[in-house]
Length: 61
Image (cartoon, rainbow, N blue to C red; front, top):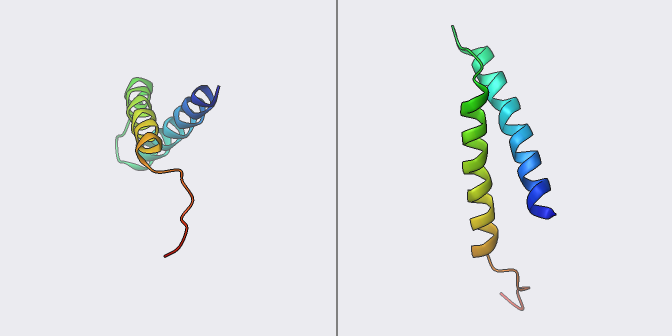
């Protein structure tokens, strides 16, 4: 379930970012498909990063 919600929020936020950036560029057109592809890539990077980073507490520095 956490993967679903992670993908949901990544998808929504990347689509929102894509819309804003396309609106700010001159002659830019919002493309839903490119935002969807980027959101899948970002989701994969987040899943890999959470798998690689340690989850153990640090004892002492």
